[in-house]
Image (spheres, rainbow, N blue to C red):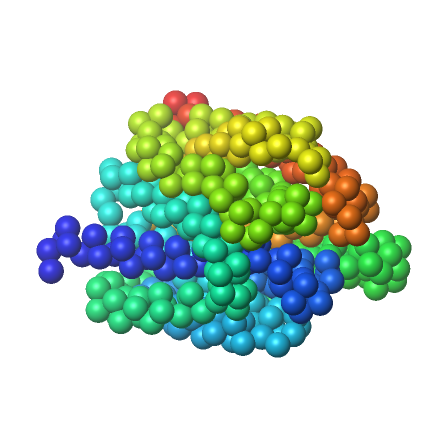
Length: 469
């Protein structure tokens, strides 16, 4: 097999794996109102339907990357695909909300293995001078999944049943498994022991904080259980940082954060996913719960928002090779903040779609401008042999942002609104979306700390030399 052919196959297999994982997350958001009615789920259970996936996903991303580096990236990629496919079938068979939440948690384990390794395997297969273009196309595939998620979810839920949003993953996984075995080249990272104490500390810490945020409104923010969960989670996360500073083989090498580009890109990712995905959780329900649209109708109406990354991300990826990631990421986050502010200003149960569509388009362009360069900025800030861990760190921070965004914005929603009536839903939506807009605006400022353009000098180990400061 020629190098060009192998690169093409690598792109196809890794991108389809990413597509499956991203599609599943967005499809579920569209189906939440139907799942709430069919399974009698509470707002807390709806949050956990999203967060059970994203929490295990976020916590285990670093472990997935580390296992791939140690035991073989192709081997772990295949295992991740198998786990995700099997858990999708289990979710489709769920008779209760609790069963569905458990299946979603297992899906998150599979996704945590597939996502960072798809990026690392592709990055290794592409020459460094063309990596921005390749990762931009990879981001475009993710954009296609974002675009297809609400539309496919709406069509499937309305035409068949919500269970089929999970059955869709099964044939994709079955096709990808043999392709990954036959077409991907095996590779490993530096040898090292797994950081089991670090994994335990960060897992327990994140679970405590997110559990407290999700259940705070229902149990009361001053209740002993909530205070203990959040405080205990914070203490454990602080212990994780302290442990990582002295661990011989740390899960997160803290020295990576000494690089300004790496730190700023990951900080911007945290704010991006906090603001945007927390808002998507509620806006996906607004069109159905408050405005009375069908799942398919809601998916079609969000298409101008979700389809933009598919078209814009490849172009932005190519541009990032020339001008660097900073202007693209800062502009993207600013556009998203403006879009959410626009939606917060006009949202009413009776607002016509013509007043929403402009904000959807603006937000979609902003997402694409951010998605395309961020991976290139992160990977360009580390040595080639550290790309697996860097990818895991970036994906973990991104998913933690999504978990916290859904939990915090849902808590804001519950403080001001409810599902009792369309107006009550809108009363909770508006302040929550304003919070999301503010968080994205902060992310735009943070992204300005990224050097204008940077490249890794392989001759100087671990040093990133900015071409312009």
